[in-house]
Image (cartoon, rainbow over the protein chains, first blue to last red):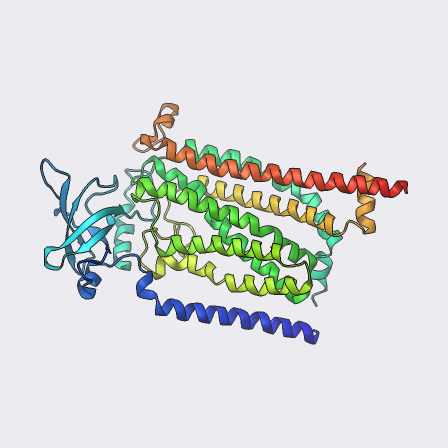
Length: 147
Length: 246
Length: 60
């Protein structure tokens, strides 16, 4: 193998390693800012200010969804199975919204008064199958354990 | 040791290989598109959670896979072109950039159209969506820079190094859904273990994936032929081939 | 059977999602078809140019 070719291989390897190292360092430094939402557990710990637009992600806790009569106001708790946060929202809910659904709510953390949401986004999982086939519980459990 | 690469990558040899096998890929792609669309729109049952709208997946996923695959092949070709000075590798790298940009754009468009009814928003700055958008900008940068630089060996080397730097975005896109909290769901197909998709839906996805991949190969071969013809227009074999065609 | 494909009538309803689904398929297939067509045209243009060039070259 010629000397110039060996040099070129060396250059490419160095470029690759340097690029990966720099990116890894940058991403490690930014890792908290890249997350698009806090989980309830993280939200309580991070305790962002009441004026800062925040996102909260988790599952809709079963049995906690309360629709107010004569308005679109709705209360529910979002949980990550470590902690749960009371959410207040007024508006149209996405069609995938239901108990145990993974969701992301955008709004403001009002400390002791819970979370005031301005937008509710539904997160759907990576499982696809026709309705009526009960492969869901196993994979859902697997998802919960992975958390 | 590496002489077989040079023999296979000789412009004349590559040109006639493309000429011979390209029609096959074209026909295969067409058939797979017809069959895949039939499976995706008629045969596959609706999803338990999303209903009918999940059918966007059958074209969104192949577009996303190809937007990444194009960049990976591009990087590999650039490395080959850089180290072994292969003409055909440089041409492959050059023609793949616009195709990758097309697929990145289609991924973002179909993704946001799918996101509106299911998530409730067209766009969110989560790690997956943002890194895919960055891939689009990288493609734009590669295309723009290449058209601005003269066609010299020096320029080819600069492009090789820059393409390699851009390649770090590829694993970030793929693993973003595991490394960070994202609104985007995890991988369905490209994961360890069994695919999280029912067997009644899998054929549609695999057929569409095959259709897009064969289309990309057909397209790349066609572009390579054109570039090779332009590059080697004064050689004896091109002249003879043209005369035989008349 | 639950979840089985209901036939052609169902196709046009798609639970209100028809515009999204068909929009996506339309955009993607349109782009793919247009790209294929344009690539073919560009290739044929180059072929024609080279053909003319070789013919005039042969005359000289």
